[in-house]
Every structure is written in C-alpha cells, then in structure tokens.
Length: 188
Length: 188
DNA sequence: ACCTGAACACCGTTCAAGT
DNA sequence: ACCTGAACACCGTTCAAGT
Image 1 (cartoon, rainbow over the protein chains, first blue to last red):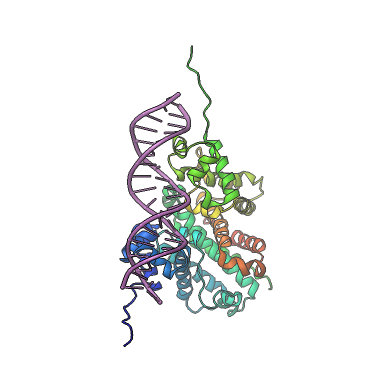
Image 2: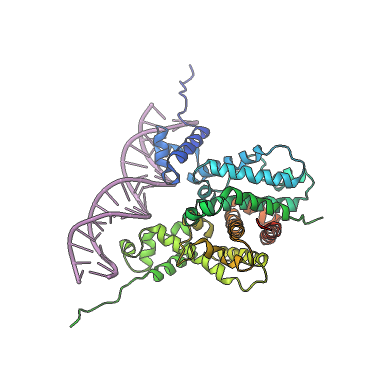
C-alpha cells in the first residue's frame, strides 16, 4: 500500500489570492505574515515553506498587477498608441488594488518566464517598429509616470485640496499624452 | 532665584538631521525610533515629546527633500525650462538620499508655511505665464515622473540588466524632456 | 518642560519537532 | 512533504513617574 497522501493546505496561488483579499480589506499595514496565515487557517511559519520571505510574496503581488496591465493592452496601430494604452492600464491596476504604490516601493514585480530579458520587455514596442533602446527607455518612462502618479496621489498633502483643485484622472491623462507625444526615438 | 533651566537634549532639527544620517548609513530598514534615539543618546519615548508619531518625522524628511529641490531651481526664461530644471533637481535629491522613493511612498512631504495652498504651489509656473490649472497639472506630472523613476530604478528586477542595457540618467532625461515638450497648457 | 522605565501588542524569521 | 510550537530579536507607541 502507498502511504496516505493528504492534500496540502496551502499553495502559492492560494496564498497570493488571500494576500490580495487582505490588502483590499484592511490595507498594507494589516498585511502581516501572521494575519495572512490566520486567514488561511494556518500558522505563520507554514508560509515559509512556500515563500523564501515576505518580500518574495509581495513581489508576486506586484508582478501580477504589472503583468495584467500588459495583457490588458489590445492590438495597437503604432507604438505611441501602445504606450498610452499601457500607461492607462497600469494606472487602472494601481487604482484597483489598495496601497499599490507602497507595494511597488517595497517589492519589485517578480518577473516570470523569460519576461525578464530586455528583448521580451521591449517586444511590444519593437514589434511596432521602435528600436530596442528607445523601447526600453519609453516603457520605463511610462511605468515611472504611472507609478509616481499613484504614489503622489495616495499622498495626503495634495489629496485634500488637489482633488477639488485638479482632476486627477484628467491630469494623469494629460501627463501621459504629453510624455508619449513628446517622445523622440533615439534613431529616427 | 529662577529655577535652574538645563538645556533640552533634543529639538526637531537635531532629530531630523540624525534621521538623515542614519538613513544614509544604514538604510530605511534600520531607521527605527529606537535606533534613532540611541544615536541621540536618549530613550525612544523621548522622541514622542517632539513628534506625534514616526510618520510625522518621515514627513519632515520628505518635505526637506521636496523643498530643497524647488530652491535649487534658479531663474528661468519660461515655464518649460522651469519644469525641466525642477525635474532634474528632484531626481538629484532622490539620488542623494538613500531609499528616498520608499520614504516618499510612506510619508508625504510635510508642507511648511503657506506652501500647501494651490496658488503657492503653482506660483513658480504662473509667474512665468502658465494658468494655474495647467501649472498644478504639469508640476504633478513632473513630480510623478521623478518619483516613479526612482522607485523603478531602486527596484531590483530591472536594475540588473537595465543599468547596462539602458543608461538610467539619459533615459530619465529623455522622459523628462518628452513630458515637458509634449505638454499643452489647457488654455492656449 | 522634557525625559526615563516599564510595559503592551505586535512584527519577520528560524528551527526543532511532529505527521 | 508540509505544517506546528516555541522561541529570538526586534518593532511603534503609551503612560506613569521622575527631574
């Protein structure tokens, strides 16, 4: 007879999903290994069988947001259109998840597969005719704008008067348009 | 006779300076109230006489970086030049202090004086002929780009191959130029 | 007014031990 | 293989008490 194999209580996807739920419900301050474990009906050290440390878990979360944004971008006629759609998708993703900006500040998106290679990162843009160096540079700028905007927007100092004073959605859009419009590829 | 008045061991400036020193030497993970107090030869609770909580202290730190950037911008011929110089100054400030991006993600810059009012924030640009709404929007976009860039740059995923693949300084500059070049004021 | 001592309610992580 | 129990070395913050 084979030994009885009982089903594991946890797997990576289960934990990441629970972490997103906890983040949405209680915010990043409440996202501790102990609370997460409790929600999964398990003790905190059990999580360390599945993840090296908390940072790895958070990296999978930002990685998911990051990847989903790319998937949301449909077929585009040219690289400028792709950049604008990508910027909007990133912003949507960061608005969807609570404290997303703080998450990105702590834990870089974990790449999966060969998505970490420069040609793969540049691909959506090089496919539309942009050279690789320009593609990497432009994509980095769009990510930075979206990331910085949500950090800025989450910040209290502005949030009070700015949301009356300044339409945040419209202003982000204006910034994104400006960035993409003004971008000049390194090789004409 | 008056009672003997002994000099206080601490004041706000002293603490903020020590916090910057600790941040530079040991990074944001080591910036705890207890370690900071130890460096000042005092017990941790003493800090709570001078600051409401840790966040207030961090806000003074980001506020200092933020304000210094503005002071570094000299006289400009037009608002586009001001935005570019301001963006560069912000980036310098964030490179100067370790973990600056994470600091900004946690604690919004504490405004001081009447610097928190919209007209004051817009002033450097409205003085150069831009309308207030465009000024706030453009300034927010430049801040976001600088902030996001340093978050992005601090992140590991890219940092490995990106620093060979992509000149980070040159790319930031290209993004900043694009943003400012492409920006169209709301009122022509 | 300004600081200390002691305590509270937490953290992330390690590691032997259980099953 | 996967999880628990117990422990270590920390946190931020409060509060009575000292001077």
